[in-house]
Length: 299
Image (cartoon, rainbow, N blue to C red; front, side, top):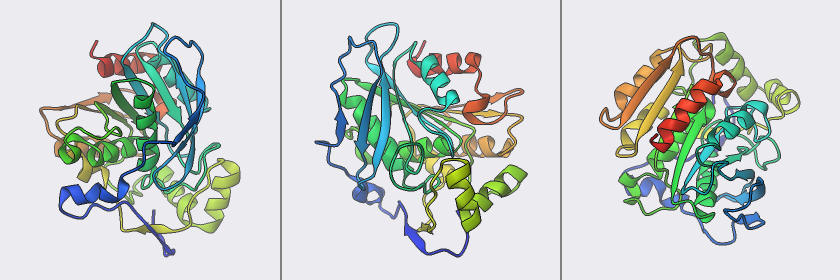
């Protein structure tokens, strides 16, 4: 986000490491409003999740189609997406062959409350979804994010990971996949990103976002600027990390995934550069989704 707007309090990360997330702790009781989901239930179940800063988030759980499993995949969509977008539903169907799947709409998107902060406080939305997956009985929860969601899963894995919590938080992820994510904030090097910045930072652009893309965008700027994706990846290890990027991505060129991979722990990180792939969930075909499912479940 950019522009001379009144500033919004962000999720900053002052030293020491443990103090970076002290203000993000949340109450685990009474935050999930849903019918109990039995492992034998073959049908999706909807829920309203309450984030630690009080935003209501719509979410959907789909059991694994191949039988009970201890693993759940939490899918984080891109900017202007939502739980009911076709590309999100296609990804959910693909992953449900391997594990239970949680999809949700970030704040300001779909039927969720609040307004989008374009990757900052969305970390709290993802944390609530991961906690919900664990509350349903899954002992291993992994995250997959696309574009804005890709930056969110990186920041979430850093802020809630074993390095800061010693593996005790219910909001932690056990593996993370980031697809088509930016490495750094305020990037305007491509025409699509220049248009996106106009939508986010200009009053007229936010009207277009609200009525044209069904996305309600916060008018305030970040204060402080949140930990960037490239600053986050060194904090993710020992959690396994997969970075995926298309060589025809019109938003972020290949220096973004390469920068992320270079900053990460090479012993726990993989980089897939996909020939002919465009951007985010819309460009993720069935073959790639199957490969992601295999990687996430260790097949």
